[in-house]
Every structure is written in C-alpha cells, then in structure tokens.
Amino acid sequence: MANRYFGIFDPLAGKTLEIMQHDGTVDEALRPTDLTDEKILELYKEMALLREVDDMAVRMQREGRMGTYAPVRGQEACQASAAALEPGDWIVPSYREMGAMYFHSIPFEMTYRYWMGDEGGSAWPRSKCATPISIPVGSQPLHAAGLAWAMKLRGEKSAVIAYFGDGASSEGEVHEAMNFAGVYKLPVIFFCQNNQFAISVPRRSQTASATIAQKAAAYGFEGIQIYGNDLMAVWGSVKE
Image 1 (cartoon, rainbow, N blue to C red):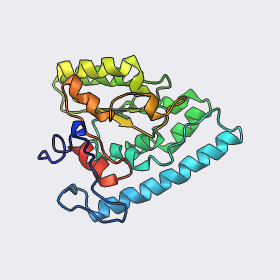
Image 2 (image 1 turned 90 degrees about the vertical axis):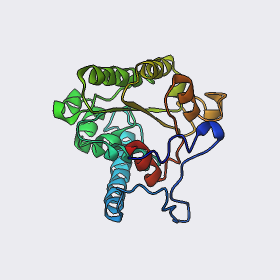
Image 3 (image 1 turned 135 degrees about the vertical axis):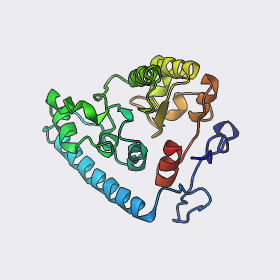
Image 4 (image 1 turned 90 degrees about the horizontal axis):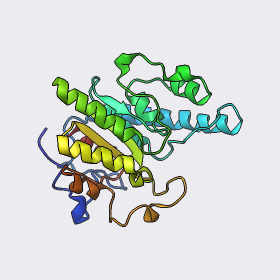
C-alpha cells in the first residue's frame, strides 16, 4: 500500500487524520481502497453487536455476576482496528479489548468467562495469535515488543499490535517498549486509545505534549493521530 497517511498527517504539525466527517461526508481521496461499502456495512454490524455485548457485560457486572469489567462503549471503531490485521498477526490486549479480540477471532464467550473468574477464558488455541488480557497498566507494550523482536529474528512477515490507553502512556514500560522497537526497527504498532481520562486523572494531567501520537518521533518511527470514531481512518492507518 502506498504511503497515504503517515508523514502527511504529522501530529507534530497538529494534523489529525479524519476521512469521514460528522455529517457523513467522505473524503474519497483518503478513503482506503480496500474498504468497500460491503465491508463497511459488515464492520458496522459487528460494531453494533459489540455495543450490545458490552452493555450486557456492564449490566452483569453491576448485578455481581462478573467480578469486574472495563467497558468498550464509545471505542468500537478503535476496536475494529483488529479487523485490518492478517490472521498471522498478533494482538496484545489490555483489559479493554473485548472488541479487538473479537475482531481477531476470539469469541465473546471467552472474555465473559475470564471476567467471571474462570482462567479458562484465556485458554484459546495458540492459532488465535493473541496474548491473554493484561491487567497491569502499561505492561503489555513490552510483551508486544518482545513478540515483534522474535518475529524479526525468525524472518517472519507478520506484525504485532499493542493496545493501551492515554493513562498507560505515562508508564515507564510503555516508553521502554517504544524505545526498543525504534532502535531495532520492529514490526509493531502501538495503538493508544485516548478516551481523555485514565483511572485517576484526565488527559491534561498525563503529558505536556500537544498530542500523544507525536511521541513516536522521539523513538524514531512514524506516528499519526486519528479521529478514533472514524472507522475509515482507523482501518486505513492500521492497514498501512
């Protein structure tokens, strides 16, 4: 795929990739060529299903049928980023990736089992190419960097995507992982879902940087800020 987004939508220049506007109009010059109308409809149905399954999980947690649960509501398009991956690519989830796991063929029922206290909910077949849910904030990007390094050493053509939030971007492990990935030119995507509030403090208390995406420049790899509710922007940038 030709470089259509990275370098052009430079977060250091204050640019954000947004392909579909709030009124539904689309910049066809930026639309991903492999994201057909049929594919968009399919993904939309899956995102709507995710919303229902997510809402059900929240109700079950409030009823005491789950020990805890981190909602995905409002981040469905970000979660659909996993649909842009190839089957052999790996996802490394935090505790808020039920949707991403589903888009990468981990069934909802397994995530439900996990949050109900059954560790068997993490025992999916190794062919699924996903690590177990990571609870410690910011620890999973290190796992992703390690996976990507192994892939590079083996000469594999797959990639890894690590999901984390804006709060995790303040954790030292995240910076260590990105520095390592930059030095060794690893095939890993660090996907920060910035929902503007960490467990304890808002986004403005996490960093003095204008954006989180611009931090990539310090580690020697491309970064991009996208509008996270724009499925086309999410799909296109992850695919690229």
